[in-house]
Figure 1 (cartoon, each protein chain N blue to C red):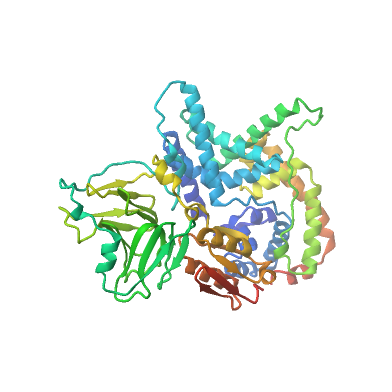
Figure 2: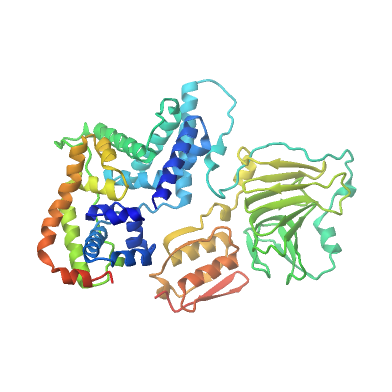
Length: 201
Length: 371
């Protein structure tokens, strides 16, 4: 499995380099590769689909127009997610001027986690998953965003720190604090035996 | 795969893409289950991670590849606008539409003129022109002729399952059943072909003075009797084009076309123009028919919608039991399959004795549902 991931990274490296050298095809390939992920993330930060699409297209347009000043050693996906976040943040800020809000965090993570209903096969599982889901959604937005970036976008702790503009330790805390509170609620409830016999096998 | 042997926490599993693929899409189910059952501690961890994953679903951005493509076009357009703005000079606008189409597999039709002269004829003689009528008369096999006198395209399904979307003011002559080791049809006008793969029986389309040979692919041919040019545009697969043997041309060369390439044959001059970059030709771009622009990549789409797309593309009517199929969704790729194949794949995917019957452009689907 890891060799597949390595190949992905190599592909991006090549495409990025080609893009820097003015290869339109590589640009288009990267666009098509990451567009959906970026839309997903954008939608978690801004409720207006059209604005999100515009932002992402503008991000890519900038990448092309300023390709000469792009860095070489870039993890493309992380870079793209970060650029999208910055752009949506700017948009938010500008609109903010006309609104009287006192939130210190410019951007809020808007998603609520939901349940994979098709994959929940019995009542015991359903109850537990529902419970977990509630706990997850009770977490503060920053923690949810960190969880989303790590487990849905596959970013490393470093990359998350970079993206959220915090240090490594803070990013780590965001990730773990969330799951920690989940664990506490977890532990009490169901005996080990039931766990093993339910669902999986 | 050994990486997972070192996992000690739920987070390790969650972050593992192959774990997610297993739980959410049943990829490598056996491998994972066997490994999980190897010890109790591990099984508990896996179960906890699984529950967490099931509780952590996020909205999916359900974008079709067509939509992604459109966004890519918009982006290039924005780039050009800004480049133009910053340059601020009066330049002849080189249409950079080619940027929109540089991606992966079969995209839509592009146009750009790269002239590659294959052969010339000094003699502009009418003797060299071959018409549909002559070709059909010459052919001794019993042929069926279908003419499209309507304003909309018509779908013809051939005996091998291939489909031809015949445009208005066009006609196609074809044998009721393909016998022998060649499949031959004769076209006057315009059609979009989706040919069933059969390497043992190459498919030939005779259109005016050129013959197009394919094995299994999709492409468009334009050969109107009163027009100067004959055009062949390839969408997928590979196609070979040459002038008809009957024609007394100085040379008889074959041109091979790959996806997104086209050839324009100037009838008077006997000249082939191969277009390898179908970008700047607005005529070719604008004439792309509906079917060439619709996406047949479906991810978790209701069957009713898929059938509607097919109705739109082939201008057929599909009758199906709506209540039996209302909760059925499919993930499938139907691009470049002839109509008959598309229907077959859909029926197979729904399962449970699902079948279709086709009578002209009326299709009836019988099914007991998808559960």
